[in-house]
Length: 413
Image 1 (spheres, helix red, strand yellow):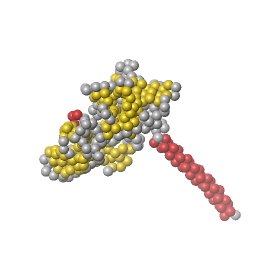
Image 2: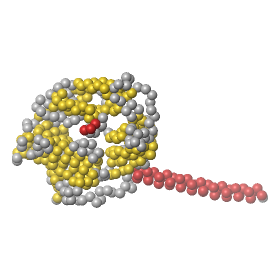
Image 3: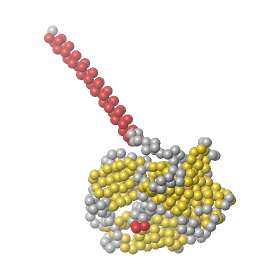
Image 4: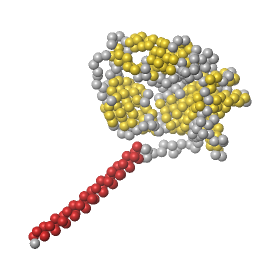
């Protein structure tokens, strides 16, 4: 009798515990689902307020920028420093300094990449009766433009010197203007441009070049490709075993089928080739070799452009970098107090603290840590993490993979 009583109590207790276990499992599954949903929403920026909601109608917008970029508002003549994704209205002037660059998305979906030391004026950005009009004047410097499929009622025009250039669909083009001489250059790597000067229209096609001088368009010629670097290799490491600096030999070649007349070489301590960081700025070099002596430990960048016999000058090629390191024991470089601030679009401010005087690099940008070791730098990244390298002048360096969501160090390398 007593045995049956205890069995009954045991069964009832077991039933309660089973239901509790099922409930805990259900709550755990629900919690995991909520956490996964919140994590996904955070990764895709669902909780970030829409910064474009107060943009004027038909305004273009700066979707990416680096360094110092300024906008002068036509309506108020106020000049603002770009710190986040912002708008550009008709009449506004966009200016980049030596370390600045910006990407502007127009209302027709085209993208204007404003290069360093450039000034442009957005003269028109309107949508009317289903069509879209974009007109930009390049006053000085260089702009690269990319269009997608252009509807028949869309006009995308770039003014350079005395020319008006209507971009066709699926076009990649580069426009240069020299405020000092009043001349300009047009390079088409894909698609085509209809150029008008004094009412006369000329079609510049893919892989063609033409210049504008004195109100006249030069004869079109084959687009000259930039030279190709040979040595030192990109990301090469050169050891300074003597401690007195090293001699580095630079070599390059013409692009396939594009012989050049002379070359322009720049070697810099900065990836942005800021004027105060350039060590070598040698133009009209006839040969394809150069030697630089006495380079101390540190990271260096080099790039080239070429000029043909007809006078056509290429764009700069993609910069290469190399590092001079001092032989000897390595110094452990650490960093703390990491923080990330999203300022708009794919633009982030990364800050932290390391040893004083360290060079901090990420996404092609670099800065120097202050006397207290603090540093802050602005980067552009479409990913949710970025690599940050910290090094000194003796070749010691450490790498960190930083989360752009919360500033946590994901791993070191």
